[in-house]
Image (cartoon, rainbow, N blue to C red):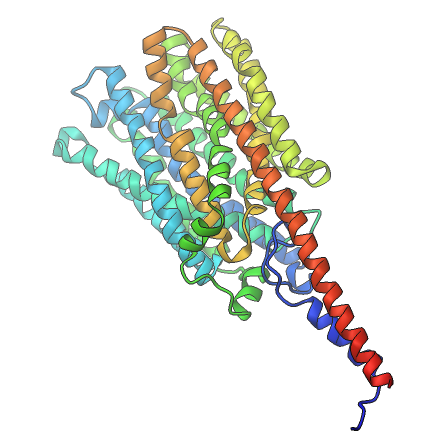
Length: 490
């Protein structure tokens, strides 16, 4: 039988081809079930800047719309939509709209996650942005209880649900748009920028309310509160202009070319990554607890319980959100150098440690002491929230990553955020002291620390298993190639 000539180049090409064949593993660079050459995964610097800008602008618009309601709920919505109740009860009902929004997020995560894992991240993000903007604009046009009666709060809650539904599809896709384009060593830093959208959206929504609450007479109650909701239409148009210019992520495109899309991403996620979803959801607990202490509940607590002016508390919230603009990327930069989980865990411990001292300072009634307390709390918040995106992305492979991340955050925000402002008010009413809120934050921090540690260990175990599998596959390939060489040599 004629022997094929020995061709080293051909054998080397065969080995390279076989080594690049799909292997399902975990970890970051190995998370994907599809391996593509390194240069296909990394976008050029100019494109990366556009992608990051798209994610930041998109999340800014979504969070601006979401927080416009939270700020208005703390300042005025109780009087406009729940006027027949005691002021404290009315505030609780207005804050209940925050919970309604968070209940929309898991449904949004399922729907947007399904299509994000099936047809692509970019297309889904465009739909989520338009949905959020439309719901927010309609809130700005909504008649109050005085005009249409009980229909007003009912429609308001429906619109809040739609806002939450849209937000459920935004964050996971915005993070993936960046990290699936980024090169190793930059993923945590660039992946922190979608979280910057939260700080920017909060800053903008707070700043726009500052001059409005100072309007003379009852102008703010009559029409001023509507302006932030109507302005969102302009922000949505800007976000769409940028978002429509970007490309789909290379990791998703490689997975789609290989025909490895999940037919039903939700089912595959729950079947193979249930533990990751639950642990990631619980890891969010302290973020929700600290966030509302800083940026929403603080407005009510500072004005109604401590006695500061509304403008003073809005300025404190604005200062903290501006600090977060630098703190969130700094956390990502540190995570690229020292490890994502390590920075996340340090932030969690810091949030636990400062909980009681922060409220001791706030309760002195000194505005300077309040600044110190809120700024110290912001540091821990930045370390946890700034690294959350990559912490979640590391837990899921590319074919179910959008669904897994969004579902985990959707569940996490129900458990850790939806009822937090109401819980804080109830704790104050029942205990008469802020110490009970500090206890809540400490407990949430301990839950987060335990869950994130288990999630990290689960990921490390998956990476070790993947390393064994990859090594075995490469050894088998090498043995086959050696056998072929020996046969040709005969």
